[in-house]
Image 1 (tube, rainbow, N blue to C red):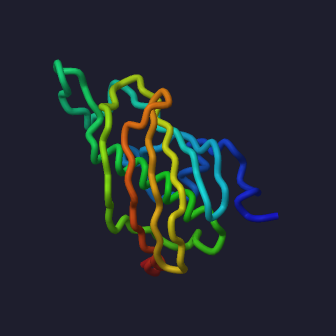
Image 2: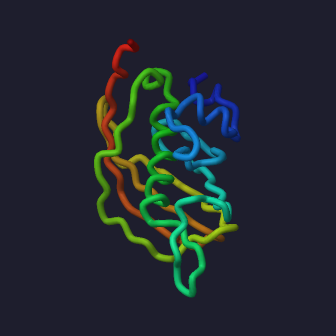
Length: 155
């Protein structure tokens, strides 16, 4: 039995916090629905009307900034990578994004499905393809590069 299959799905917020170092207000994913070790993840970000980083969109409608949406995709990918037992004691660093396209605005009330698919995976780095969807429509997609590093010793 692999360690990922030992994780309870769906992963709720406390399960996610056990894998990611992020905390409120920077923890951007709410639930993990699917996780295939070294292959794929599907997570959810529920967009609430009281999120402090909204910007005025068309017609003054609050819109989720593209950078926050990109970070949510990266966090979903980070859960995929850090959920492996051999990576639990490591940190993951978001190193870059390529070919990112923002297709539609994301607004309060939207539930964003975040999919991360492994493109390349090595011992210390890799890349993931991220796709964010709202109601089945792609709102953002791109490829993210990451690096893994050992955690510094605690002082």
